[in-house]
Length: 269
Image 1 (tube, rainbow, N blue to C red):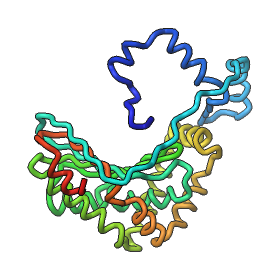
Image 2 (cartoon, helix red, strand yellow; image 1 turned 30 degrees about the vertical axis):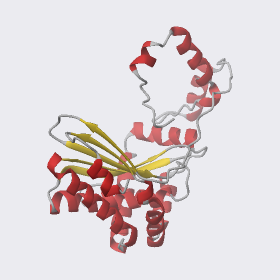
Image 3 (cartoon, rainbow, N blue to C red; image 1 turned 60 degrees about the vertical axis):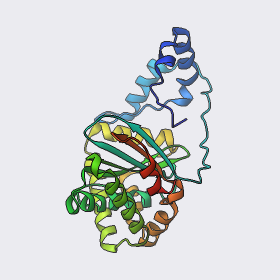
Image 4 (tube, one colour; image 1 turned 90 degrees about the horizontal axis):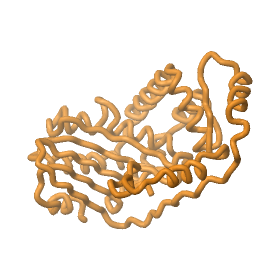
């Protein structure tokens, strides 16, 4: 499940044996669960021949299943980890969209407006206008059947509550008030970042491999750009109304705080 640390726990790591590792490899690392992606000045058939030369006799198999998402949250949740640190770290997460959801480009642009970069709403309000945080941003994660929209901020412990209050205020504002100029700027920023990133050969390889493995198809950069351009202001408002739901907020706080009561009160937990 996504909530578990992929590195395991000290107990599970110490309990691993050679037999367990070999069994895992034999069950999961099978041809039907593998994508080989190559980017560079090479011929397609040359790569195919090389792959089959090395892996053509790889025994087939059926990989193990995965845990479907259990999406039953109806009340906000707060987790506090007390540390004697000079900063407080805040992460506020909301349910997002799966990797193949047709509205994922809408969410990407909403996130760009909200907290992507130094011209985003969160950065301008919390850092530039109010000086509450050392840094603030938002991001999206997409998985097979779920996703997340997450806001992160690092602040002085004395500013933790004011910072969270402002984050919640900005989330409320973006549900009802996004300007056409903001959306246009977000589109240009998104397209520019995409095209610049694909100048790197490694990024091109990951682009193709990730889509083939998770989506079952490979879109060209031009197709993705057309999807971004097609997003409307009404769609941005609709996805914000759907996903920014206080009843489904998940707050994690790490810092020198003795209790989570004040944070819970802000979220109504």
